[in-house]
Image (tube, rainbow over all chains, first blue to last red; front, side, top):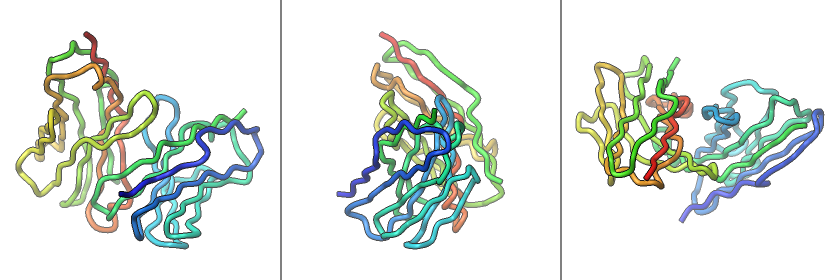
Length: 112
Length: 116
């Protein structure tokens, strides 16, 4: 069975500090990977997607970047956090471009 | 560009009743895929049901069913015999066909509160 693991579960960071969030998918070869951001009480805003290792496409610009260093790993990062980066970050995977998403449990980020 | 709209911010029902949540979408693609997810209080997002645009029959899974009205670009979610544990935020989402499917657009969500 496939599993998706996000880390960390929560982070409290200072404005201007760097950030790195991770996501690992086990039991699935060459998954399509996604990063989503959710403000408190808000919708799910897609940030990035990746179809293959080393290739990441940006959907919306929020001063964040993403990388896929391994087939099963997706990293979200920034060198300088803004207050507006606070929220809930969700990693997801799908088998193809027309299938359902499987979500991780998310990372709650508070930027102070 | 694709767009998904959920106009109901919140709905309150008594358990064991039926509730319908609305969702309207916009797309120029002739092939697309519609999904409903729910987000629990813990933040967990769970897939519920899907409808492919080329299918005429409404999808049904357990006590979830869809009211797909293609001419109106509408995909309503129907929950019958609601239970307390159905209380959650429900999101409608859409993927277009082909390479456009890598962008998955979500609606703003509808909060459902089921009370005894």
